[in-house]
Amino acid sequence: MDLTFALAGLAVGLIVGSILARLYSLKQFNSHKLQQELDASRQQLNQYRQDVSQHLDVTNQLMTQLQDNYSRIARHVQQSKMQLVEQPPASKNSDLNYLSTDAADHIKQSLHQIDEKRRVYSAVDEQPRDYSGEASGLIKERKLSKSE
Image (cartoon, rainbow, N blue to C red; front, side):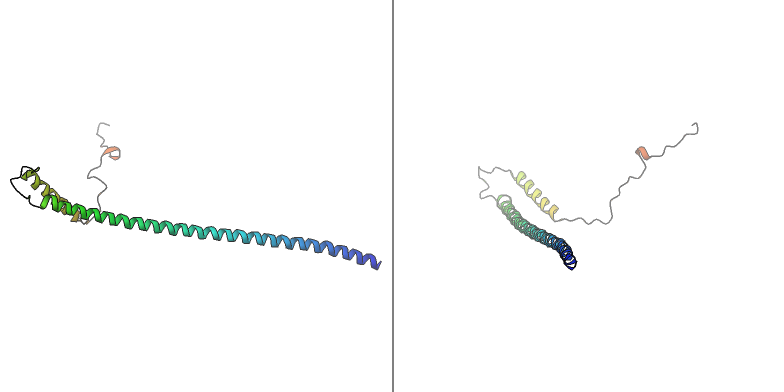
């Protein structure tokens, strides 16, 4: 009888031990799987951060190039204006004078006006009105005549 109890206890112990070992190995497997997913997520986040940083660097470089190109164009236009319009002709009796003095004066005046328009900044003191003085349209109240 003692042998039977010992064998039964051994069998129950083996069954309980195998169940516990199985549960423990599943937990270890799930823990390992979660760790792999966490590592993959961290790697994706780092890659995304690098992509964003690279995008911002490229955008910054392009904006710098754009500003440089704009300033070069502005200098070129200013120099061309000085050379083409504001310099007196080499000889006033030249047969190659394509612009009459009236046209040249008009161009000079318009260029100065363009420069003045660029420099003037208007200060707005109040917000613009979104309504007219009197009611009109569909919302306008109708005056009922006495005959109605």
